[in-house]
Image 1 (cartoon, each protein chain N blue to C red):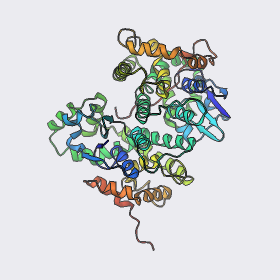
Image 2 (image 1 turned 180 degrees about the vertical axis):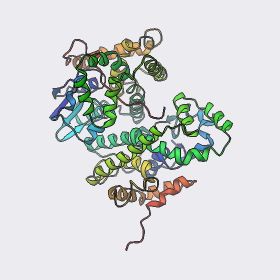
Image 3 (image 1 turned 60 degrees about the vertical axis):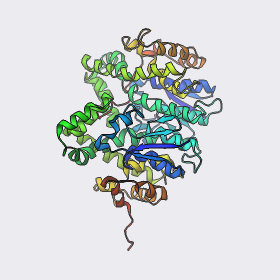
Image 4 (image 1 turned 30 degrees about the horizontal axis):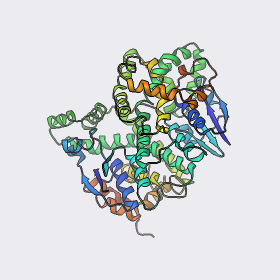
Length: 261
Length: 255
């Protein structure tokens, strides 16, 4: 039996929900509020890969005894283990492109989008809580890399200048996506695939977070691409799991920025 | 369709497709690029990979530039022994560890390697020449990384954090290999190829943290991979002292 531990359907949490809906899979849901530290509760599933996963906060899929973390690889796991249409392209070159996109966008959107989203939505939310309680919650987080994502929010590391420089780093990946979508309808080629399920949740929040970078004039192909994916039944079904009126404002720390600069 | 591989030493990212091709028994045309002569930023190579990163593989008309997905492609597209486990959970575990190696362990280990070995060697050349070489790098993020590496612009805190992460990741790997023969489980896979390229010289570069007493499972795992014919063949293509470090994995005479 598949069990998905998930929070509001946004960014990393949206990906497996779309994949499961594409597969028409049966699964049970354990909902938690990731913005309220519920994933650190003592009875939450945990093992070494789950606690060290580089997405830091994100959904977990429990299948029998295995805890599957890291959403890009969770999508491949679902593609391979759940009956229904494959989510990975059959052609090895297209499968390479799907994996190369997931790796590239993980590093370049997965580390940027959560920073922008947390600064806009999570930071004010945390500031409204009892500071002593928040400090205690953050101090207890392990490992230290995961704690650092929360501490940056608490300490006001995200200045306007910092956020501008972070948003500036979106230019290269966005231009690459725009170019790819000029050449093929989907990221990995002719067919919708896990690469699109992986990319969509990170891209669809950008018109709100950085309207100057993602808009009808500067990124027309991305706009059309987002509309095509939003219209899929699987995406509508995934979004119906929301418990708040604005799941698109639900952000938690994501992938750490490269330590090389 | 012929295969051409543009690579540096059998080490880190370059060694990943080299060892994978050798394991699959795929013959390839080898183009050695000297990373420290900045061959990867010269026009001939930028025509192949405009990002100027190595390795790159050309199979027929198609170009591959991301080394870990490249390994999966080699396994998918060519006959030869399968290098991914059949079980989806084992495959997921293989991919999880490859990401941990690529994005957590390797960047910290290479920061230490650059600060101690490669940076000082590169600085034998005039600073002007190095600066001009950096200016030719196409991607800004790579220019920043190369500037840090060549001029040793790592702060004491950054280096201390990298050392902490290397020690931590070494222990995590040891714990994993205590209960798992190979990275993905019972079978040798791309996860081992990836991890070997990262870690074959750990007993030499991190002697206090990776040795027969503290990390016996890592040591045995590295030696088992070193003894594979494909690894012998691949490291024989090395031209410098960097690849020669692999000799640390020779088993000594048994008492």
